[in-house]
Picture 1 (cartoon, one colour):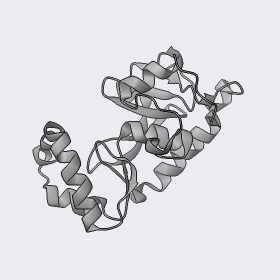
Picture 2 (picture 1 turned 30 degrees about the vertical axis):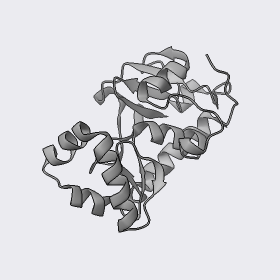
Picture 3 (picture 1 turned 180 degrees about the horizontal axis):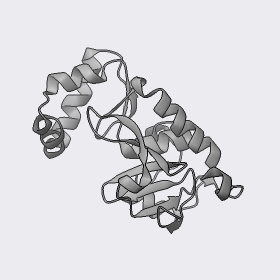
Picture 4 (picture 1 turned 90 degrees about the horizontal axis):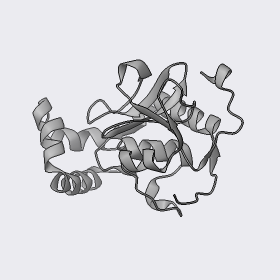
Length: 186
């Protein structure tokens, strides 16, 4: 397992996740998005076209399969910062998109849980920890809730952990959990 520098603590992660949720109108889910700000139509077309060609089955299922068009997606992301679930975890735990990190690692949902130390069940996981199920991650914000980048047109939301089907919870290796107050944080 790689050694990671400690970049934040669990309360920073929890606070950033809640802050992101409170400002969710400034963010949009985009599969493959890494925290890029989409300033205008040209930028939106460029990223949607690139990602759609990289992941056609995803966009066919979640955009056109849900009754939306590519044009609606382009319009939806203009003026927003775009990210998928893995990028959200990185964004709230490190305050940046993962392309600008000095630490390189597998940013897929599976890569994130593999990098974690002290992996357990969602019920026993730490506030500020990453929650995982195959193909998806979110951040435990305490009180039985989590924040996630859900999918195109749903974007950023907060839900109850028990409703989401997560099977693992882990401590991100670049987050300090040593002063975690489990009883009061959860």
